[in-house]
Amino acid sequence: MRLSRYFMPILKENPKEAEIVSHRLMLRAGMIRQQSQGIYSWLPLGKRVLDKVNAIIREEQNRAGAIELSMPTLQSAELWQESGRYDAYGKEMLRIKDRQERPMLYGPTNEEMVTDIFRSSVKSYKDLPLNLYHIQLKFRDEIRPRFGTMRSREFMMKDAYSFDLTREGAEHSYNKMFAAYLRTFDRLGLRAIPMRADTGPIGGNLSHEFIILADTGESEVFCHKDFVGFDIPGESTDFDSVEGLKAIFDKWTSLYAATSEMHDEAAFHAVPEGERLSARGIEVGHIFYFGTKYSEPMGAKVQGPDGKEHFVHMGSYGIGPTRLVPAIIEASHDDNGIIWPASVAPFDIVVINMKAGDQACDDTCELIYAALTKAGKDVLYDDTDDRAGTKFATADLIGVPVQIIAGPRAVANGEVEVKDRKTGARETMTIEAAINRFVA
Ligand code: ATP
Ligand code: MG
Image (tube, rainbow, N blue to C red; front, side, top):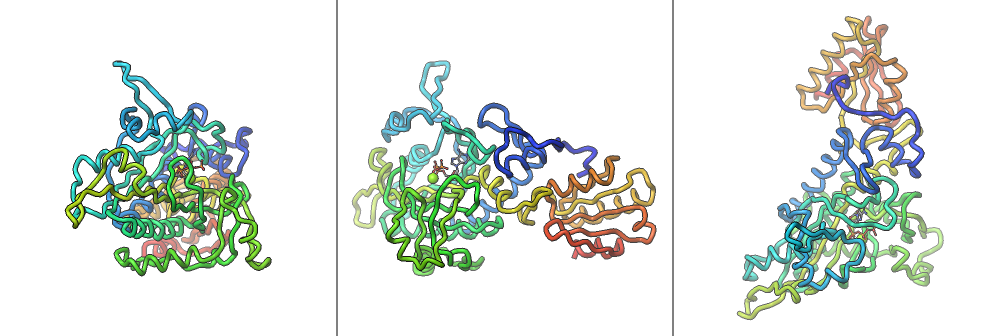
C-alpha cells in the first residue's frame, strides 16, 4: 500500500475526548471515527487490525471444533418472548418496529436465535456435540459508553454456542472453549487470566471471565501471581481428549482468581501475601455453561440413546474483538505510539522514503516495496513528500513492527536502515540484506 494513495487520517493533536491511552492512540492513528455516541466506523488502518484479530479468533474456534455460520443483527421479538428475556432484558436492548408494526430488536446476543436454528433441524444425540459460532455486530444501549471501542454501544462479538446431551458433555465443550481462549489471547500477544465470574442476566452455573491486567481496566480483580507465568496449551492440543482438556482447566483454575463480584476476601488472604495480585483488568472474553435454561422454554430437545427426549445442555462463549483492539494497545504502547504484536499489526513493514523525488531514494524504495510485497508481506510504503521527521513520527504512532528507512546518504552507499519499533534498535545494512531478512 502506498501511503500517498491510502486513507489514514492522522491527528496531530491529542483528542480531548479520549480519557485512556488506547482511545487516544486509535483516534490519532486514524483507526476509528465516532459516528454517534458509542457507535464507530473502523477506518482502513483499524479495519486491518480488526480483521487480523478476527482471523486468529476464527482459527482457534475452528481448531477447537466450533463451526462458523452467520446470524442476522436484527431479530424478531417473538423468539425472545419464548425465552422470557424480551421483558427481562431491560433498557440495554434496542427495540425497533418494522413497517408492519412488528416488534424487532437489534440483537445484544444470540442464545434464542441459535437455539431456534438448532431445534429446527437437530433431533438426535448422534448429531451432538455441536458448537456454532459467528462474528457479528451486537447492540447494547449501554448507560455509559466510553473509552472508544472498549465499551461501545454497537460492538463486535464472536459468540459461540454449544449443545450437548448431558452435563458432562457440556463440561467438555466448555473446556474446549476454555483452552481455545487461552490460545487465542496468547496469539494476540496478551496474557488473559480466567476468573470465576458471576453468571449475570444470561444465568447459569459455571462461568469464567478472561481478564487482561491493565491499569485502565474497569474491573477490580484479585488473583495469584503465578498465573502470569502459566504455560499456554500448545498447537497440538487434542480437543477430543476429555482428560487432557480437564487437566488444562484444572491447572488454570487451581489458584485463586476472581473479579470483585465474586471476590472472597478470606480465600484471597489464604494466598501468601507476596503472591497476591490485586489489580485492575479488562474483560475480553466470557464463557458460560447454563444447562437447559433456553432449551427447556424453547423446546430444544434430542432423542437420546435411551429412546427418550432430552433437553440439550447449552453453553455460550463470547469474545469482544472491537474491545480487544484497544486492550492490545493498552498492553503494548510507548510515548511515541502503538507497538503492535506482529500477529495483528496492520502492516508487517513500513518502508520510509526520507526524500521522495530523489531518484536514488525512489528507486531503492520501489525495489524494496516490490520485493517484500511479492514475498507476501503487508507493506506500507511512505512515498509522500512529508518531512522525514513527520514520517518517523507517523511510523512510530501507527506501530508497524519494522521500519525500513531509505535516506539519500545511506542509499548512496547501497544501504538502508532497519528499525525495530519495539526496541528502537537500528541497524544499517545493504539493500539486499534488508530484503533477505524479511523474505527468508
Ligand atoms: P461488561 O461486563 O464489560 O459490560 P458483559 O459481561 O456484559 O461485558 P458479555 O455478555 O460477557 O459482556 O459479552 C462477551 C464479550 O463481549 C465481553 O467479554 C467483551 O469482550 C465484549 N463486550 C461486551 N460488551 C461490550 C461493549 N459494550 N463494548 C465492547 N465489547 C463488549
Ligand atoms: Mg461478561
